[in-house]
Amino acid sequence: MRFYTHQHRYTCGIDLHARSLYVCILDDTGQTLVHKNIKASPEPLLKLIADYRDDLIIGVECMFSWYWVADFCEDQGIEFVLGHALYMKAIHGGTNSRRFRRSQERQNRFGKDCQTTQGRHVSLRLRLPA
View 1 (tube, one colour):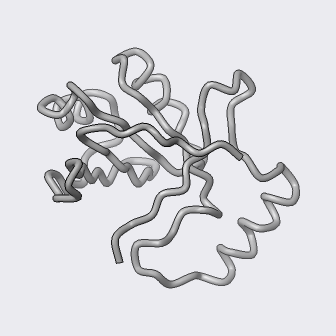
View 2 (cartoon, helix red, strand yellow):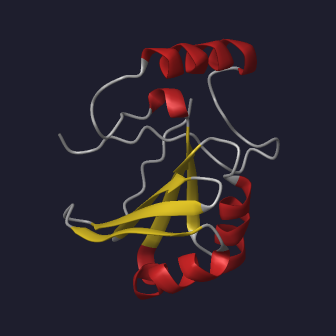
């Protein structure tokens, strides 16, 4: 598994849902700059990240709706990182055992990394402050 190790001034984590995105942007000191729920489409996302684009990386969890965000980042020239759900620490610190078991089953079925066939996206272990 490969880990993303480059430093950026701004880090954007997106919790993807079918109709909405929960966006959190942190600066390089860990201060929260944005914590907002927006519509799941490119226009609101572009508007929200406009002030932070100079040195921004966007990370999302590998799930069914991440493809358009990856394409959006590529079109906009923004660094994009895909994180495997099994290796991402939950915000609340708890584990839903059924979700954990399903993640493990998917990992066994599809392999440890969740990457596109082109290999242009890397897995990322995101660690949130305790």
